[in-house]
Image (tube, rainbow, N blue to C red; front, side, top):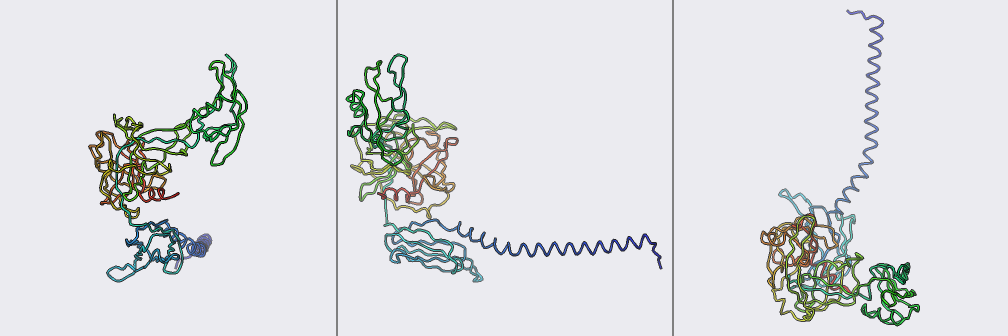
Length: 446
């Protein structure tokens, strides 16, 4: 038998007590964690699951009349069309593996007739998690074009590019429109006269003899009237307002498609912006004009290339009625110059990552097919798809996507799915495309 000293007995007692306290402390910490994390997990897990399910489901849906579409969610989600039952029928069936375990659901949309409705998705057939807009459009075939044309757009009124000084004497200047007119203003009338072009404004200023002129303008969508007073320039021997204005803009772009039933067209895939103000041009009218391509400026990193050409103003091909964020739209006078085979459209849910082709006219009058790759999908505003040019012929001639190719139709699996819209300045082999259904929607909007 071993006899412990007082010091050893005290040490044994201290160690045993410390161990007991330690075990108790660990138990207490575990209990706190259990009581804290279980309620938090009970709250967070459904929220995270709901967010994930919401993210995986579409934000909207466009369907073609008479063409059933399957939405395989791989989630226990069902759906119901809550309005306009005559527009769209919805059925849900479970997806199962070899052991008949339900893994998710397959939602079948049956577009009955053209119109709009809403679809609500339910989690486990009970909890509503998302409601989206669904549009059913008529069965549509369009002729993809890919032809380069001249585009001439007249502004609604005169676009103010800026204000400046007028030399009234040799060393004496005045700025008559400072604080009254701003860059981006549209001048509609002057002293009651319609400002159909720059010459009309010059006439009003000349006839004013230095008297105050009442100007009707549009600024950020709102009309207002201001009074401006011309000053006499001794150097030019004429009355001046000291403003720079533009009444039209011209360039080269590509027609994406036309509707063989109506001759309506869509082109560019992006809007026409004023180079000085950076704003989308508000147009009064416009024309598509015949053009002759003369040169290709090859694109390279940091310097986008371009197609250059001569616009034949006496050969008008069509009328431009709308300039929007995702293209210009109007009607063709004749379609003989744009002969082609009509193709069915491909909706965005049908577009796949992988091979596709574009139709482009980069030399003479010939429109050719070039291979591209769809790499990823974007967030809209003309940047729905990230694309890469893979065709060696096009890369050798242009370096990839160049200015003037905007609007080149994108075709995949025999369907017209979109148009080229932008080039990446630092990587001209790559750029963006917009979905054809987005362009069609803009064309039909009033």
